[in-house]
Amino acid sequence: MSNLIYEVLKLNVENSTPLLIGGYDTQAYSEFHEEELRTQSIKGLWRWWFRAILSGRHLLQGYTDIETKVKDEVGMVLGFAGRRGSQSSRLALRFTRDKPPIYRQIKPKQSGIPPRVSLLTLGGNILNYIESIRGSLSVYLFSFQEERRTVKDENVRIAILSLVSGLLLSGIGKGSRRGLGCIDFKIVEDRVGLPESLKRWIFPDALRDILNEALPVKKQVEIKNYPPIPSVAPDFFKLWYIPFEGKEVGRVLTDLQEFTLRTKRRMVIPENGEDPFRLKLIAWILGLPRQVKGTGYISGEIQRRA
Image (spheres, helix red, strand yellow):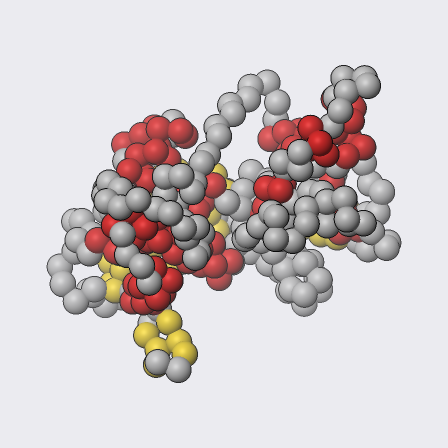
């Protein structure tokens, strides 16, 4: 490997919830192929969080044309292609598995399956997914200067912090917004200077420290308008941390997904009690209820954004 390519971060990773990565039919394996942890899926997640964090920085600094500025900066680090030309990413991902993944196959109406996974078996479909996969995820930096000890480029460092934030807060593959595809990781090698709290795995502290490093600037102007793209910034980004004990991850995943179903939610609401999600329509972040029969969220009143 060229001496201009440096490994700046190495993580031991494994999935904690079902990983649905596959082709058009979401099948993890067939007689022709077997899926692993796709770095391409991680790159999409990575780019989203990098945009959001850069947008938050520029909001605080008072920039106006944030969308264009963020697009340019993301492209300079993670690469771009289009009418204006093309440029390769300065950062590369590589996943190396420890051993072959463990796959699982489920049939329609099979019990003990998270609701969002069961939905994919409607119509008699048989589904298979990755139940367990372990390996190492490495980030490599292409550089024309000596950076063997620490990463000096600020936007490159923010990009790597964004990757870690994305792995903490988001999932990979199908159903990732419903708790599927969650990845746990342990830091093996770090030339970025990640917060010490992250290495001790104190989740709220670790995430706060990451965002404080990625957003070191204080608000310089009064922000009056809604940002044009998702932004990690005060007043526009909030996170609630709810610890739990005594339940395995699969049970928690099922409980959370069932809570988004009205029939299941009614089971935990006191008898004759009103469903607060139906009274004030405050659950848009859960993706429910949709605009159906004019009783759900009406376009123009509530904005739902990826």
